[in-house]
Length: 246
Image (cartoon, rainbow, N blue to C red):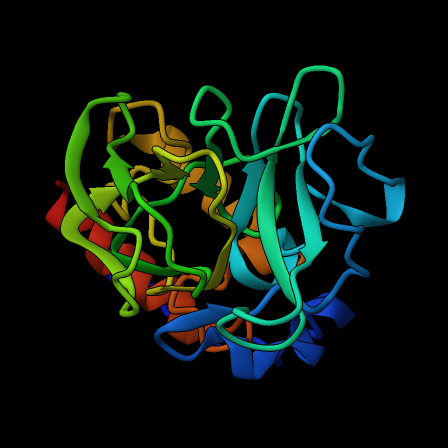
């Protein structure tokens, strides 16, 4: 069967993705300075402007949650790894907490937030105030199984790191219920199986149809090679992945 190669004109992508093109380099990096931080007062209601949920989804492919569907951006001052802010967890009532019962979750998706994605390495830095206790970074696969973890004493100044294929979610917390986190780094989120475009666990015509539907309208979700454009290179890359299966 003849292979049809599509070479359309490059489509413009969403403006937010274009503006954030440098963030597509590996590793991706978040310093949590995008939102204004709240006062570091555990138990206080997290102001709307300091609630971080999916603000980095379109640019970095990551969504945050805790006891509520958002976490807190907190002004930490001295002892902050970079800038002014760290992140803390949230309770179901929307208040700031560092309690390990409400760990910070970060999950990886495509830029629309519809399709799950995975990475192979994640690191994060705990705040630089040293007190008794430990801080932990855990990694989970797309089925919710823990596949890696890194626990260090609170006085450990280097990043916590998990490195293993297939990380869909990480969570971070401290035993002392006091540690804020900063400087999150990870590689470019990818489909768990690149050809399983609709993430239903199978590689079949449904995946091809879905990719083609996005490709025809120049949707960012068809940027299969993550180069910032939707063009024939993406179609070729997807076709190769589809033929290879998983």
